[in-house]
Image 1 (cartoon, helix red, strand yellow):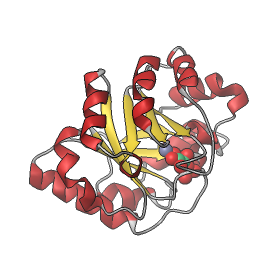
Image 2 (cartoon, protein in one colour):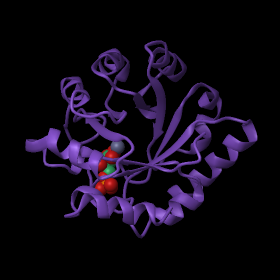
Image 3 (cartoon, helix red, strand yellow):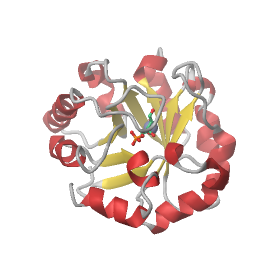
Amino acid sequence: MTSKKLIAPSILSADFARLGDEVKAVEAAGADWIHVDVMDGHFVPNITIGPVVVESLKRVTKRPLDCHLMIENPDAYVDEFVKAGAAYVTVHQEAVYHLHRTVSRIRDLGAKAGVSINPATPVETLTDILPDVDLVLIMTVNPGFGGQKFIDSGLAKIEKLANTRRDMGLDFLIEVDGGISESTASAVSKAGCDVFVAGSAIFKAGDYAAAIQKLRARF
Ligand code: DX5
Ligand code: ZN
């Protein structure tokens, strides 16, 4: 577990026509990780990017690429994402039949393995996999789009997960994604979040460094 709280700007809200420059800009502005939202138009109602883009981004940033796979059948793609340079590969619990097999595969390939749950999925469904993951991503919006409103029931889930982690003596990271802003960040931090994903709060701000500092001030 890290004591430092990390910020992972989500490139979903970046200008895709200038993606490399956008990533370099948030890196210079103090981003700890780069959050890459991968959507397939099936698991979520939006389509974004694949391993080819991850491979290109790997060449322009030193920051860990945090790949959030919002896709059906992620087992068919985890090898490609790791090969492309993903540091973290996070799959949705709801999209996988044999979660232990999937996270083991990600780790065997040399990447860190994460598991994510949608707002309607109880955090207790993850208890048995917790010893085998490096990160748990709690969604605080329904995945698919940036700029949505934070769903408050996520706070209790983060807290429960942080307590379970302590009780089980584990050290995976708790990441929170969706609706992170100056007004939600401190409650999320207090609940136990380690890694804050923020899309619109950073990329829709004129000054990325100022936006990141404003979030950090809330942790
Ligand atoms: C939503 C994505 C998020 C999204 C967050 O499906 O997983 O990473 O970009 O955007 P904001 O921070 O604007 O809610
Ligand atoms: Zn995401």
